[in-house]
Image (cartoon, rainbow, N blue to C red):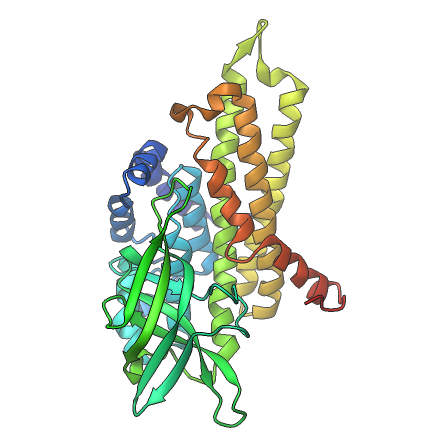
Length: 385
């Protein structure tokens, strides 16, 4: 087992970090506060191949694994330019299509994922069911060769930027009559498909939306892969989502920690840098330790996923997502405390992260559901829900 990243991944991190820092957190917050999008950064990252590192080579991508894509995501966040759509479009959607899509779907979508030309949102969460795939009310029924999709979704990221949405619905099993999950590619301009922005108290360039699907008619080829793939197909996207979510949190934690450490070195009170006081030095050191531990678990999850061990990756990805979110919250809180009043001043670029890091504790799966998973699957305790 090797705990050191390859030279190729380290070089990838360096190149992505250089690009992201050329834009920086000031660019990101200016775009976010004005209601804009990080299109300039996204498009340049796509042209350079950073968004398509995990797309198979035969479709124009880098042919690497989710670990490399997660490293790209982490470096963008560590430079203060977190792009939430990275967790969704090249990770969930491109991965599901690459693993389960038809040849026609792969040829149509993957080359454009590789260049960042196309963006696709992912819609599973519903107002009443949350992310519980067994309780989703969005249904798809056959009408000849077509599908008719009806339902609602909530807290779906980046729909206003997306060309299409990968929607999780439920179809009826012809043998048992029970509903099972299925995935559909829905272009955002399809009749009957509407989306409305949810106003959020977040300073983010990625907006959140509610979806309304009212007799949305889709051709047969809108169904991704096999109707019988069911949960296996769904979890092919959810494990990368958790790995990318962990990397997203880790990058923000690094950004905040770097800010806190730099300020603790520069700011002097009573003739010495404030970082010389254990009351500030120890919390920052603790965050560094927890960050490195979370990063190792994230890399383990990615390695298991890339090796084809979906169940093992599921356990590690949930743990990584949990650990990354917790250390990100601690890092931002301590960085602000280290800055004192300056921590809330716009010029220091920390106050806007207070809400952003809470997202990692809530989505794409809540901290409590991660603990339920570990209790049941890792510890063998009785199911609590």
